[in-house]
Image (tube, rainbow, N blue to C red):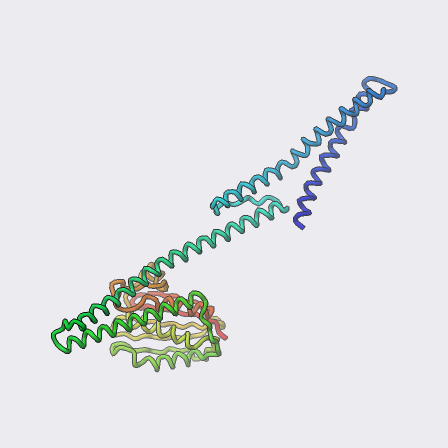
Length: 351
């Protein structure tokens, strides 16, 4: 055990100091005896020499023990100072690890504990910052449609319209804003559930190519007239373990993103293939304005919108939801912008 190592070290220093004292100072009596050329020492003389020998041996033992044990004492003081600094909030402080005894193991454990505390502290700070940003974004995105709804309903209630057609337009706008509000609230609920790992995946054996084909067929009616889809699927059957409803949600969000930001007229190309015999690769690619690296890095963050001026459409949560669902499937998602094409790629483990 580590405790035995430290005890053994102290006892070793003690024994070495003792033997050194005896070895060095075991000769004074004989030396004095020979020096005085006495045939026989009186009791008083012998006791005096023995006492002097004993006293000097004790002093030498204490000095020897202190010199040998001094590095250990210094190391203990360093550990104490390090713990004190960490307790005062300096979690960047580290204690040097010296040797392979209990003290070095203690120093290593303290350093590891400080690193974990720092990581948790930084994580909590990050959560608090994200929480503040989330509240600010929610307040803004909820206030905007609500303000429009209240304004148009007030106009209808107070009959501030000139024709029945204008009134119907106000009602249509109010209805559209209300649906936008419901969509935002649903996205917020979904993202919160996914981020807190409260969503349960109902995994089953899924034919990925067949799922993509069904999704495209069911989505044809939602495409604008100046946009179409093109499927380029793997000739091999791709089997994965996944929650089909959650994957459909991913595909819907990617389709919505493509519809919103594609250059028109355009074709959304959906591809699938097997990579490295253990990974399924899915990509959604559409013509779009080029993005710089800083924009690509922000795409999967909550409430980020490619065009911040277009606050009337989109919640800015679609790609964040995509990322959360893919991560729950132990996959990876990323975006690339190459010339006039924007591509979102997804990797999922094969069955």
